[in-house]
Image (cartoon, rainbow, N blue to C red; front, side, top):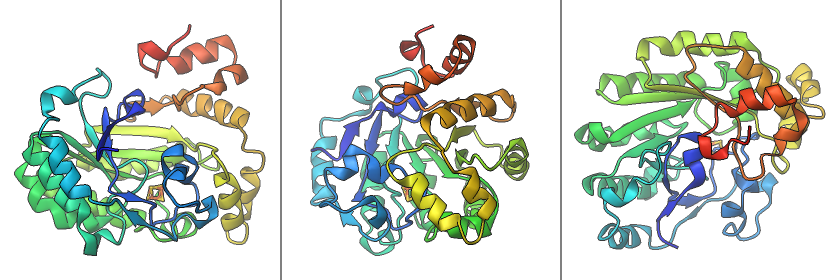
Length: 305
Ligand code: SF4
């Protein structure tokens, strides 16, 4: 497989291409649905979803293969969809600034090659390790967009649900530094939690407003594989009310909660992502008018009503 691959993430307006330097992510977020995705399951040597965070496999021969691929993969070939806008996402099934990157430097090497080749890169990370690479990003500031997830602002809750990821406060600081460097930023209020309400969106927006992010998008927690079960067992002792709230967090619950969140009508959030994955099973749990409303957040190709 080549290092840069075509991606369906255009459906979320995140990009047309993706590069994952690693299999696995040491941050080990309990909500993370990556370990339940085929792209991880086929290459993680049979590790279980519960082991997510405890393993990391750097991709073999990545930098040399990328150099080879970039001989033919030029920016004119990268722009394939209107919603993806030719962005190359780093990364989707891992955090490309997972702690081991500090020593291994694979992300840094790839980033250099990709930007020098003229591609546009959307960097999605929970880690301030990205600050190490601000020198490269500054030199290509028209080609980069730096983003992080801020599903909520509580460092205490993050310690429970995202045990080895840097705190929301530190992520916010990283974005501030990126802006100081003249870089454009975005924020993902994701995954938005069923035990939070509109006030949480407002709180996040309040702190990011001064950064004038180019995008603020929101995506509701996706139930996938065992992630809800893992979250519940992490929350049980310290957040019993959240634990109860996640009871029966099924696809039906998800569909209705997504509709509710979209209905908050928060103007500052300029994108909502109603999980446009493969089968879109959520349709059967909503009324026709609700489906129509939700579909207005999907690209035209995916709408049915
Ligand atoms: S940082 Fe991202 S990829 Fe890593 S565990 Fe958390 S949600 Fe998953």
